[in-house]
Amino acid sequence: MNLHTSNSTIENKTSHYDVVVVGGGAAGIATTASLLNREPDLNIVIIDPANCHYYQPGWTLVGAGVFKAKQTVKPMADVIPKKANWIKHAVKYFKPEQSQVILSNNQAISYQALIVAAGIKLDWAAIEGLPQALGRQGITSNYSFELAPYTWQLVTQLKSGKAIFTQPALPIKCAGAPQKALYLSADYWLKNNRLHNIQLNFYNAGDSLFGVKEYVPALMQYIRKYSANIFYKHNLTAIDANNKIAIFTLTDSEGSQDTIEKPFDLLHVCPPQLAPDFIRHSPLADNNGWLNVHPDTLQHTQYQNIFGVGDVCSTPNAKTAAAARKQAPVVAENVTHCLNGNNPSVAYNGYGSCPLTVEKGKIVLAEFLYGGKVSPTFPSWLNEGTQPSRLAWHLKHRVLPAVYWHGMLKGREWLAKPVDLKKL
Image (tube, rainbow, N blue to C red):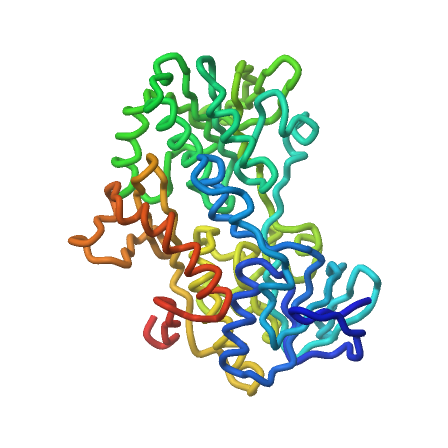
């Protein structure tokens, strides 16, 4: 096994660390950086087998021709904090009673504190016929780095026909992403005088357009503007790629189900999502497979030296990079207290954000806390969050990528100061 630092490779000399971080995505890197800003001498390791780190919020804009895919990826070695170690292996299972993780090569790594930032699994195989169909026959998804450019190719090539966009049952990461793809595609077709020849359908396994009601009126204005049809309680369960047929299961109000077949020329799929297998089948998971943590401190409900951050957590917040950005300082602060033998002192309030790209140049900036409580960052005179704005587009297009690469991943906690646990 090799243990890597940001720009070098050295042999692994130790199997014990002060802090082990499982996952080198947005949440894992940000939390590691925040920890090292607090305690520069910590012996900390990130465990992740991936070669690359992705700015996933950018893939919506790749699928709309605004970004190039290469703008959303960097080598993992370039984003690992310089004072952190990196073990390029997968975690096989956990031994929390012994404070150990077991790697894919069966090596045991012990820790004083564990941070689980394992992300979320895209379950492409849950839709029959989908894995082998992706990237051909007009079937695409902005949930994939490789496929987002294909989305844009399909959008620009479609002159007429049937375009279908799907959303599975929640939770998924960035619950607004399936409809963002619809809006940006429709905006292109409208501006290029094609929309009147395209039948636009949104099939949603849920029963509402968006989970926070204050934002729905603005979104419905765009649904009407683009003459899109919405079908609720329709869950994509299979694809006949050769005949370009999408197969849905419709569940009515009494729970009975029916199978619906719909032809398409373009099919944008959001796959069902669940916790990674090694989390779901571990002693750290709740009954639904998610990492079982307290929603405020993000400390594990059973093991006091284990914390969670990001999409893998059982917390009822939106699974977004914005949520991870707010969670990272909370976990960093509470882990620091844990290492010193103290209880958690700060709390996460459930903040999540979803910049809903309703057209090229305008965004409805949805920001909310636990329970769907609207929580705008900016005053209404600057940005009215429940309405589309150009300022919000500028933030998404120009500001937030820089904040991600140069702020969040460096442990800079701009507008992310943790809340005192006693003040909640």
